[in-house]
Image (cartoon, protein in one colour):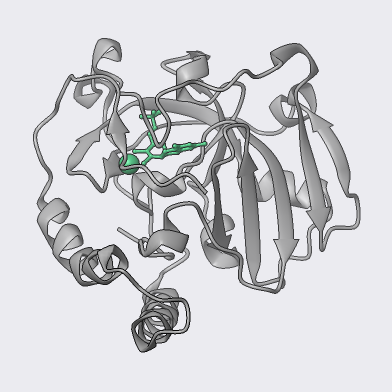
Length: 246
Ligand SMILES: Nc1nc2c(c(=O)[nH]1)N[C@H]1C(S)=C(S)[C@@H](COP(=O)(O)O)O[C@H]1N2
Ligand SMILES: [Mo]
């Protein structure tokens, strides 16, 4: 697996946010351990895994599925030219937009491939929410898309399953607890600033999840898997917080 630091591709910046320091402080022991040269059978790794599992469990317990992340007025929006691009890879993946589908597998009654049109025919939500990157910057774009829970309903997902894993066109991947997936602000996003999502921001469709840190808002999503076994993530498997609640 490629190990690179998160690279900021554009350089516009918005000031910090109060959660940033706390979040970084919270993450730093994990990052420190992850940065050590851990032997696969070493005690450090099993300690880290146990600590992370405990941390995820605690965050799952305190998560309130009805509590909304703040939504901002249009005057608070980050101007479109300040809509930053970020990713583990500097290259934007080649996505065949004309033939794109979202593959659904696992604990669903209607697995298969779904088109963008099918997703866009579901209820639409537009929201101005803050995207917080763990690197210490944030922005308030205007997102538009379908609440993921409506799509899960369409595919007959077992919402008693514990997890949903997401795979992306750039080989990025991440995963979520079901209560966070069912949260009303968790979206399959296909628009930003009332225009189709730009390729560098994850076209044709990405996850937007204002209740979690930015690395959970997966771009270029092409597969969802509903499962009971806990999946990982590109950054999470390198020691970043899996639950990543804000
Ligand atoms: N597929 C994919 N999704 C991704 C990433 C990535 O590298 N690949 N980076 C994450 C991180 S760290 C951030 S901050 C946001 C950046 O989204 P943006 O480029 O639209 O600002 O995407 C997240 N989703
Ligand atoms: Mo990020």
